[in-house]
Structures are given as C-alpha cells and as structure tokens.
Length: 216
Image 1 (spheres, rainbow, N blue to C red):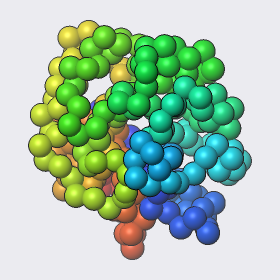
Image 2 (spheres, helix red, strand yellow):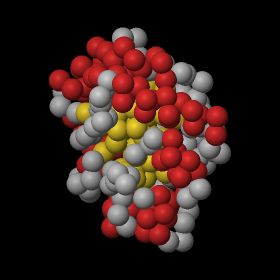
Image 3 (cartoon, rainbow, N blue to C red):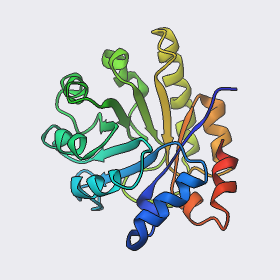
Image 4 (tube, rainbow, N blue to C red):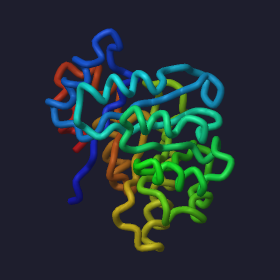
C-alpha cells in the first residue's frame, strides 16, 4: 500500500498556542502542515497571511502545505513562498489563467497545486494536469472547519486518479480536504487519495498520535 500523507490543518489548532500545536502533530507523526489562507471574499471567512506563515516556518521543518482560498492569488504567491511555503495550492475557480500561475509558483521555487470546489468537475484540470504537483479535492464547501464530508465528491477523486493515470502522472499527489476522519479517510483512499487534510478530527482527539495513525 502506498504511503498516506497526513497534513493536519492548523485551522483547528489553538492560535494562542500555535507553536505548541504544530509541535504536537509533528511529534505525533504528521507529514505536512496544512495552512488555510482565506480572504473573506473567495470564501466567507478570514484567517491568516504571509507573516504567520513566516513565523510557522521558524518552528518546524515539516513541509508547509499552503492552500490559498483567496481572490487574485497571483498577487500573493511570491509573498507566501518567500515566507517559507513549500507547496502553494491555488483554486481553479479563483485564478484567471491557471497555467500561468502554476508556472509562476514553480519559478519562485515551490511546488504547485490546484484545488477544485465540490461542484467543479475534474475535467477542468485536463489542460494543465501535467504541470501540477498536487490536486486538492475539496469534499466540503471551503471556508470553515468541522463540516461533514460530502460523499458525492467521491467519484471526482476517482476521476482525478483516472486522469493522472491517462497521462502517466504517478507522482502527482491527490489530496482530499473536508470532513476527514477515521471513517471517511477510508472512502477517500479507496477512491484514489494519497494525502489527507484533517483539522478538527486531529486536534479535537484526546490522542493526537492515534488519530494521525488511524488516517494512515
């Protein structure tokens, strides 16, 4: 079985003890740290900016998996990469010219991901699928943590897996975010996911290590 990457979302961490909560998941076996950036326009919530990413970079060596849920992402990708992001994922629905932005992210030295909302079909990825390092499939409407996993997104995960197979892109990561727990992770993995974002499931668990292991 292929290794499953677990990327805990700090959206569910205690922001007054952010360094502590990052260290907790790092010591518990997490692979990446998922950072949700929201602007209050593309999604109905506001979270953090590049200065916080810069501070996080100082306290962990784990890859920083930065998910930009913002309008005009082309204005900000360099700021987040300069702050220490290893992976920048932009939304298909927010980027004017997706391929150009993917190229821009790579020129600046980060890996490039593209995310699609629950109602966006996998077919929109085909024109640039060979250029991305990661596809992030949202299984909730982006904006808030703690939402219920949308089972009707499962066929889309399979569609992305088939699309990657068609283009012989075995190294491209299929990441799933939204309502991931010890039950829904199995559905996502069976459909083709090999990276899982989980926030409330991990951070609300009395045993974070056990929660992370259950996802793997």
